Length: 308
Image (cartoon, rainbow, N blue to C red; front, top):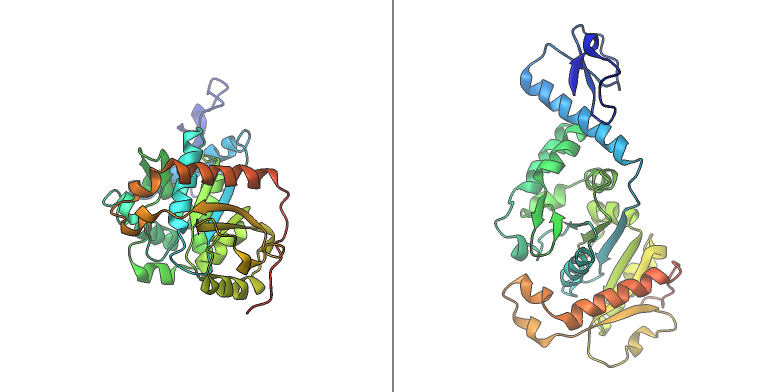
């Protein structure tokens, strides 16, 4: 509700967003006052920012906490995106409000969201470099909804240069904006196998990090090396993907505590669409089994062997 001070009264609904139009230049910084005489485009932008802030203050009175789960690996091609999307899908089926965020340089999820919102990430980065407050409002306008998955998402970055130039603060602002909106029970973040600043921003905000490993010596060695210098060990839960039934002796389970195992799916060697990754109950059911197991465990640091 936009009004001048002369019209303010007890009759006004308390639940409404209320902004005051001021005719002079004495607008108090941080207040809910708006200068009346200014270009319409600028006026509407300021109204949008202030209204969003009031809305979020109201939401904070009753919103629950948002769980952030990042899916990470020390090495590429371990199945991070399949795991992240299956987890998002299954949580959405349980009527949870889920946001899927890909911070990969080149995302496999482009196959699922192809053509639905190209340039969303580019536009959001443009806005955040102009004003963090305006970017927060624009994010609500830019995000999309996938009816098949039942989740919201921001179309993944489709320019490698954008990913490389994205700063830690920008990635952090994106995640913080999603959290402060109060709109989601879960944010699932699909990460690169790197320590780029945008990846660090996601890791430091994650309540849980699903660290994907496979039962081979290359993955074991890289995981050991990266983990030895990893800052966020307390959030890590190891998930073994492409499991064929042979016990992973190479990880020496007394030192690498594996939270769960996901089966090797031969049919996924020739993937044509991501729907193929989301239609096998044996895989998605096991993803949720691991999720529930992790939720009931005490969070704590994993131990590991010295680098090979």
